[in-house]
Image 1 (cartoon, helix red, strand yellow):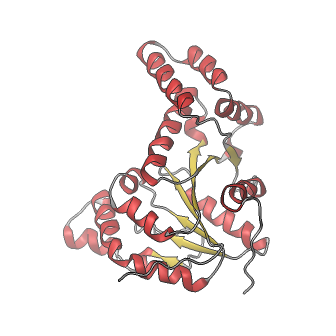
Image 2 (cartoon, rainbow, N blue to C red):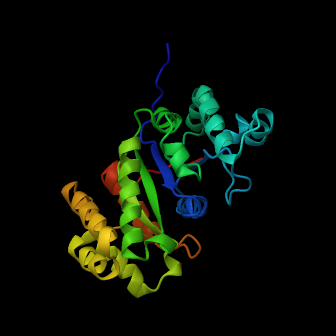
Length: 265
């Protein structure tokens, strides 16, 4: 009989986003911020295909599945090997969870695979997330790439993808404007206004979109309004370490009701 292990006040934070959106960079930067703030954090790499992440992982899926070997042995391409590796990782969920529990730290920061669509829309992705977090409080940080969301259609399509991911993983979700240092302050404020005031986004879409794109965009925006996805995105610069304190406060608000937890080692 499998026994569910739950450590009091252990919070799971899954970093999710499209390839190149800055997941690993945010994981590294937020780990540094938590450690500097004397908060205990366990870093988990859940991407079998990553070669050189910008952080040192405490728990690493690559210790259980060999992405390169799978590609060679089964004659698979990069995407096929990732799918196979994630499917194989299911048999090691208990080992991964035991490692996490053994560290006994309050914050578990999990860097998810770069090919988000392969991770989210295979059964292995949601199963890995639900099994790792168990009954512990958990949320996802959904990264919106600044290079994509700088335009109204790009922002809208990214938000729609975020809702789809939210449905798959069934976790509270914080929208992150990743790599905000690439944008002007004026553009960052404009994107924030799109996230909180849909009529401003609608006006922007009316100007930039035409024909069927305009019609589709308006329909999608109405869906977003109906389901109440009006939370402000948080601008984050991992390179400049900006926005970390605000991000931490939002995580505490959602998972711990504003209370701070520390693990002394």
